Length: 347
Ligand code: SF4
Image (tube, protein in one colour):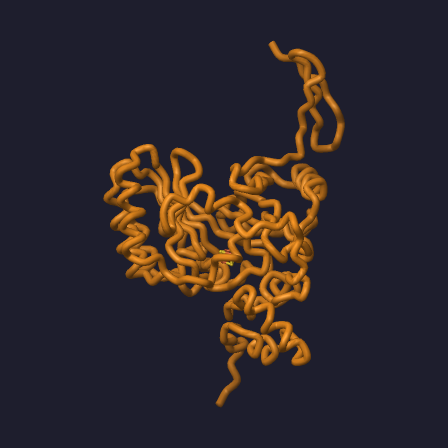
């Protein structure tokens, strides 16, 4: 038999045994990996295994530091439950809702802000989905539905097609937004059948979660091309993670790669207070220093907004750095990207 010129794709890792077989954890750590897998499911897709590298391992391979729980950490860090109005439905802002269509993902990220929920239940049961859609029908203030999870693109194309058809019948709904990691971590799932499901009268936007340029494999870039060719506008969201991407060079490389692939960097999230994620968190001042360095290097199209989801469900706000200080009524000091201060006077 001839040797393949490319490495054969590896099977996804779904537990402690797989981690050891694939050389991602020593056999001596089996009990620890099992303990960590009990607390939060283990799954690394074959695409991410093929991508390899320290930034990938840090995001998906369990780490003993996850056992370090701190008093400030919250089971529901961004307050999904505070604004939950039915199973699978969160209504936080007047004009949009979040619909958690499944709790399954193609990978389980060790820093996930929904780590207490994802992986536990599968697809939202039909009765709950029907209730959520009835709420949308009866709430004309809602113009946008955000499909999230878990990862909505783990649903089959048939289910997505049915879901999009039902959403398209809601007259006041203008936008359907998909929050997903699938185009990067499982790009083969972006099939013509799935793309056909997105062909509805509403504007369909896709926000891809990606944290490091190593995730943008050849297959991932091809999946992004298929999405843009189908007319889906693409945005990205990235989590600022110590040990993965918390420096200006790494993020500059990622944001430039995204722009080249027609993805607009949208949000850089400050890491949320999920249990057992202390080792991933930077300080806000560190994040602001990185953002200030990026502003001097990248065009505005490649620069995301650095945001914090205020713990407890109080919403998401930009967290700087700030460039403007009011010195008196109508008088401002403005700091340029090089740190020089200039004066500005209101009319
Ligand atoms: S893919 Fe998203 S929802 Fe799933 S574990 Fe990762 S961050 Fe959490």
